[in-house]
Image 1: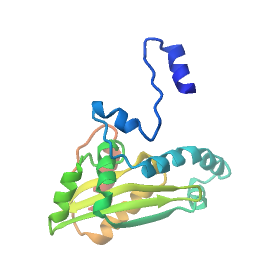
Image 2: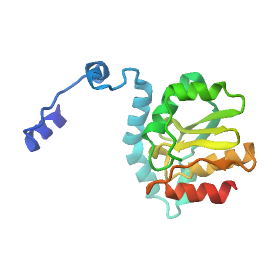
Image 3: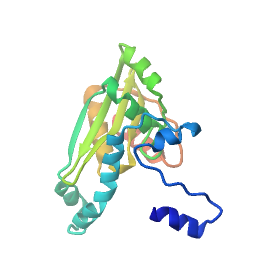
Image 4: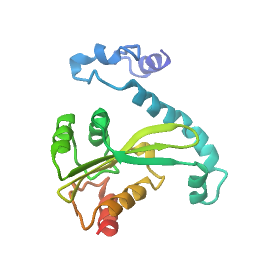
Length: 197
């Protein structure tokens, strides 16, 4: 309600509408917003942002950034993707712009990848002392080519991409890298080229 009033005050020409968070996607379906949004994923995302204040407070106690990362007590789990995770992987590939190789997948694309014998699809889950960030990363290697590498911006600045790269190096030898370079992800391209091959 407060946000609607602020927008009305600053931008009276904009019509503001207050929706209930449980029905917003069905109400806005006329503009092609997906109606199968996982509310648990959204809640984890919101918790991450809410808890960032606590993380900033913790970081202020350390002069060394690596000591801060250790104090976060992060837990990382990389495992083979399940069909129930394809929706989140697709969303992640569509939304990620900074820590990505630029590949975009639909759920149907992921289902097709899963049927290939020479294709491996992995997900990365992350939690820390403050919250469970959920599924924040994905990797797909097909015919010895890294076709998907993406990590949510919520997990950046934690060296998680290094853990993903180490995982790839332990599983695959001399793989090729598929990459769509942009201004925002060029740093990742250099990192992958330097560390994987």
